[in-house]
Image (cartoon, rainbow, N blue to C red; front, side, top):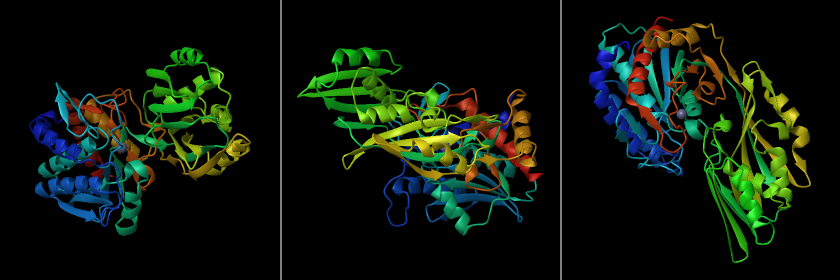
Length: 453
Ligand SMILES: [Zn+2]
């Protein structure tokens, strides 16, 4: 039986109603307005969460609507728990309203129930349970609530500028039983030069697999029946090809997934390009896209098919859009932790431009690595084992991009269990109530273990 469940079970309804409140705040990134650098939605979610903390008797601070924190305890050291309240846009394909948390049996659905509003509520109640146990707090415990994790983590940049550093801690925004390494991230953009494509639009964020794509090409430029035949041979979930007013329109429906695990998705833009090429549509943009990005997500077309003992490089196209007559495709790369930004730039250099198109390298971030035997990694891993009894799962390396890269001293720890699929960044994001309770129990133990470090 789950350790501490007898304390958490009576609190569960209360926790769920707090989570429902946070889910109802539409906290995807919006236009900045005075006092709200990421728009009003994230600020609304932050205000709601800080109010919950205040009501529970904790100290709360709002740092200019970039982020805020809820704190307890005394002492110079700070155990940081860095959760975030912003969400990725809902996207399509939901069976329920993404901003109304909906319970079906023992599962709740809604944008953010897992990533990361659920984790924020679980962490808040873990603090409550530690405090109410009466144990002496020789450190402060600070729940950071960021408003910009999904689009740049500027919230944590602001935190570091205006607040005390975290001594040790975790971000409940990855997987159990802890992540000691995160691959390096690299953003690129691919641009067309010459193309017969009239219009192409797909995807909604750079860090998710492009789930849907609409493409228009001139009638007569390809055999419609051959195009349908090729599209039918792809893993696309659905597609249609229609011809009207001298224009062929292709609608492709793929499967979204996080950019760090692109093979779990089906890229609607990539398979549209694949089908166009295979059906005989002769086009520089299509050929350049297929050579550089293609459908296999391993970076081979950019000279980047590399891997190390901790994993392979991955590549994802998230958005295709038209700007000033040129098509632009975003590329999100996660490279192995033993490579450096300079190596990535050098490997890709020969592939960046030819007469058909060009690729621009944007930001190349460093990978992250903590000693798996360190007190931090081991203290958290032990908390997971002590609560769940699971001895098989071990701390791991992921495609990353969590707050651990923005805040020194922390690693990602939960909130997703590796065998769960909570549809993070996808339609019908979910969390089981059992996982919600288990997270909370593990975070109680994690705080206790870190108090001893
Ligand atoms: Zn997250």
